[in-house]
Image (cartoon, rainbow over all chains, first blue to last red):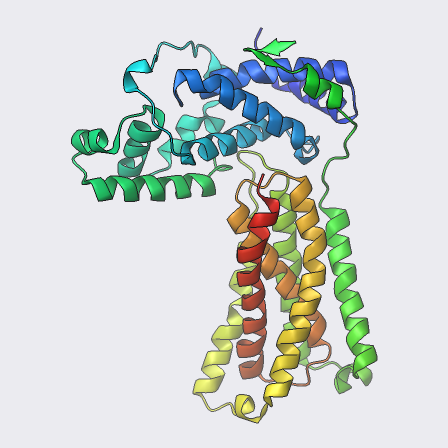
Length: 174
Length: 212
């Protein structure tokens, strides 16, 4: 079942009032939503960790949700923040381990393209977005990114750095 | 209950009712602290003579109004940042800063056209301006930082800058009730410096306190 904005919002309002049953349902639904949100935006075996981190952030930052506003844009802001934070961490992943057949069906229908990670990445200059995709999402080395993009090693590093900085500033932008 | 192998029962067990972060209480607290700053300086030293006479000058009204706008609008942006959402805008600070920038601009023009106030003003008055503005700014920043810590600002660096600008604006607003100088050069240079120092301090200190 896809989670509707209205039902999630109602669950969140109840959760802020201390309703544990509503909160359990909310976290479960939010976890599923986040798994779809992060699909193909990070190595598949890192998705679960990132979903957990995001749910922990949701738990710690419950008070930051404004009950007068829609729920999913709030959850997406928390999710984008955690995602950019994860990208900043230096990690490398075997490109061969990636599996981009992850089910993403219907995600855009539910949340709208405006709050997706693709939308966030699309606001970067292409040379920055491309090296971030290669090195931070697909797990290629800097050398491989140089080879694929034709950029020098130092330029790849500069573009990754600048791109991540810009992503941080754009987290709430549509 | 699990979500992709993650046990959420412990989070559910820990749930306590929470009051959503609201902008009004910390904003009003910051304004109240700014007013306390005005009262404090009126007890330590006299307020401006034009205020005591009940006939504030145009320069005082413009300066105080601009600083109140800068502090209030920027503080509102800061507090809005505590409640993130994709598609939400926290832009009231941009207009306030654009208007406030007229003062340093006017100050530079005044100096270039022969305003001698900077030469007349003693360094003691400058230190008093910077010091008192900074102390009041520190006080007014506390409720803003506390709200940001409860909230979830997604851009801690910008939140830091803006907290400094908002608090600096409120601090300088309080000092403007004492400052005897009405010159555009003095206001453009020293009041701008006071707000700028607070902004830099906010950028350096606040992000460490609000990162999550």
